[in-house]
Picture 1 (tube, one colour):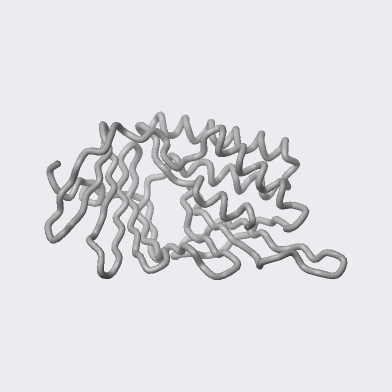
Picture 2: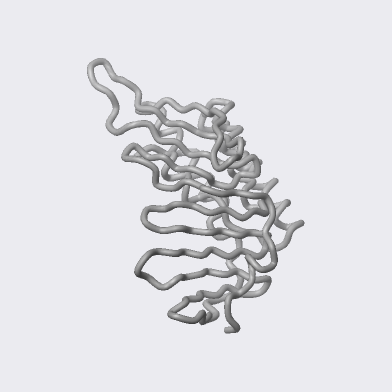
Length: 219
């Protein structure tokens, strides 16, 4: 599997306050830049990783198609809510407030339970994860060519990283091209793996309302 797929799970997440989220984004971008440089990655790939690292500070609302589920993500650091809707299953929401995290289900009414303290930087780049991404991308260079390119996804001019199999002397590398696209603020918008799309944003906007971030029920 190309490193693009690995990178998907390392993007997004939340910080612990707007100013802190911005400082964290600067730190993550600097880490991504240095590690990409150490790994010998091309300049356009390095720039992509820097952009993706800044997703920790993004404020946005996005709707995704993920397999048979619809996932709606609203984020305004440190607040974040992720709603998952799937036919034949109760709606589920994971909510991060300023002081705690909650899991909520609707069956048939919403109920919420506290699951722990605020998740610091969940899913975002941290030094270990940036290292993993940079090393994975560097390791894939023998089997894949890497390039960055712009594409429009969900009405957004996205930055995309494409990993295409290299042809050897007489055979091609296994699998097909993989693509990861992020918004200008680093929010994941598309993951297209060799077998088809694993994730695509169908709607995206900058901003997240209080209603979109609120707990659906009192814990």
